[in-house]
Length: 332
Image 1 (cartoon, one colour):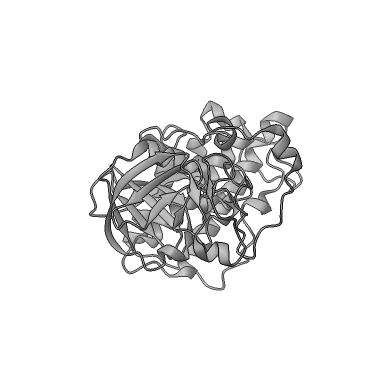
Image 2: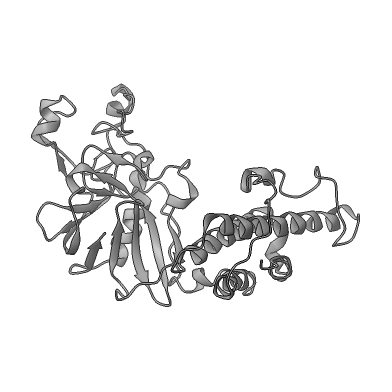
């Protein structure tokens, strides 16, 4: 098993390391990259071996946190144990659940160890993540894009329109704005650079329907990963497609099926907050499939009844700005 402590310790020599939130980001990305690297092996690393490496990383994190708390209190120098009540980050259990002791020592092959070492080394690269450096400075999420970059509904309409409960699949009714992003969305479905090895050229979109991910391929085995929701309209979508058209804040019209089931009223809903197509749409060249935003960001990572491939409005705005007409879309 790789000893992650000395590499984490080097990363924590950065000035930003005094910020608990910054350290959380390092830890979370380290965990994500570790699992990604180990799963990238063929054959994939067994789950018990991955758990062993995660346990080693978590132990190093706990030790680092114990040491980081000492200088502020003028207490025991680095390397000595502390009371579990101490520390700048108050609840490490929420960051990494206890996995319990492993019954027997586990051995990884030299290739596994090499992959894990690459992950750990990435953490120490100047105190920042190498995948961030190679992601062409991915723009941060657009804050409340649904309310700042679109036509605003009249105040009277907002005040008098009741907000119905979500449908069984989590979808919201047309006209109801669920926001630009879901703050409760699991970390794995939030936009992030990640390790991704593929023969597809840079700029290609790859849609993994089973895992609910959309990847935009970047240089150096990196991809920008977005969480997606998948509607029944695209359950049969597969193979190679291309982006055929793009539009900002597109209008939306209910399907006959939605009207028959009294889930929407006939007519066209203008683009804006609450529109089921969200802030942006990219039509595919099969004439019926699309990648678009949504008025229900809580459905990201799930299957829904209506629609095709959806992203939160923050994410579709980011993806839209990176993609041109003619971009290849590979659907797995």
